[in-house]
Amino acid sequence: MERTTHKKPLVSIRNLIKRFDDGHTAVDGISLDIYPKEFFALLGSSGSGKSTLLRMLAGFEQPTDGKILIDGVDMTHIPPYDRPVNMMFQSYALFPHMSIEQNIAFGLKQDKLPKDEIQKRTHSALKIIKMEHLAKRKPHQLSGGQRQRAALARCLAKRPKLILLDEPLSALDKNLRDQMKFELVDIQEQTGSTFIMVTHDQEEAMTMASRIGIMSDGWLEQVSPPEEVYEFPKSRFVANFIGKSAIFEASITRIGDDYSIIDSDETRCSFKVDRKLEGIEAQQIWVGLRPEKISISKEPPEAYNPKKPVNMLVGKVQDIAYMGGLSTYHVVTAAGKLIKATDFNIERNADHPTWDDTVYLSWEQESIMVLYS
Ligand code: ADP
Ligand code: MG
Image 1 (tube, protein in one colour):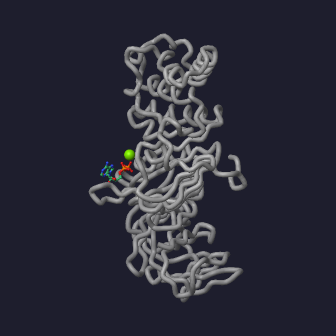
Image 2 (cartoon, rainbow, N blue to C red; image 1 turned 180 degrees about the vertical axis):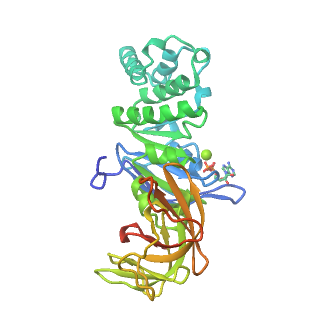
Image 3 (cartoon, helix red, strand yellow; image 1 turned 135 degrees about the vertical axis):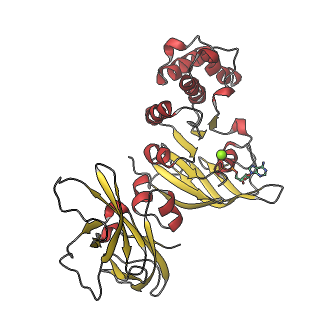
């Protein structure tokens, strides 16, 4: 993946607000930079304001306040058709009486491009979506996936700087969706254009995007590459939205350049991280642990100190969910908190814990998620 930090942003969104006439605020002060060649996903549950944000980028919706710059140009007074942006609509937006080729050429004709340029671009767009042999077909003679690709080709042929996709895969069945996921990424890489995709599907965002913006209630909760969203969520919302985790109330006991300490009554243990934390001592925060990052054992780990365990705790197995390749242990701590730990069933005769066993859970300091809200 390319590093984007030194480039000039293609899209700059500044304090963008959209309040509808009924008083509902759909976008509530978003600032965001998107860089050339990014595949950016806006991820959030239904109603979080994703489509409204996308429609403001396209120019179909006017911001109540704030600014959008594309390639350094303020879009405030620029109508949709004059923006270097193209939005991919669902398949029904194809003209039914025109062939796929004519559908792709249509926008270029409207732009009054020379005939040979139209031909060249139409051909190249058909080639990218691998549908040259279907150029003469009408939309109704195509499958759902092919129609989707044709809609994308029509969008690509105009060679916009920015392509916007609102839930592009939602109309497809699961198999086709899985296939199209990879095709969309391929096409984006091939054409070198910048994509902003809206989705409510975590897996889609995680597998397709180079960066994800997680939206909730018109806000961007976090903007990070997929690995970071999973490994280092900054809030309980993000930690719960992507993947599973146990979350504990805690407070910062020590902030140091070399290491920091967080204590949690709910676990009766300390969390030690090998870095300087943001925040102040005594600040209330939360810590999170992913089930697959927790080791479970019947014997106390070497460093176990019953008076003050650090990055480990003791509990009792309440339940075990056996799933073939792995088992998830439900462990209850002395303070009554449930923690799930998954263990891979690698050795067949290994002495695995069972119900009511006292067990020790431990984790690496890199696995501790520090959540500030
Ligand atoms: P998403 O795409 O994330 O599902 P939307 O951007 O479509 O969310 O909508 C965000 C919120 O704004 C929703 O609560 C929706 O009902 C509201 N909304 C969207 N469009 C309008 C409109 N034209 N008038 C009033 N409210 C709207
Ligand atoms: Mg939407």
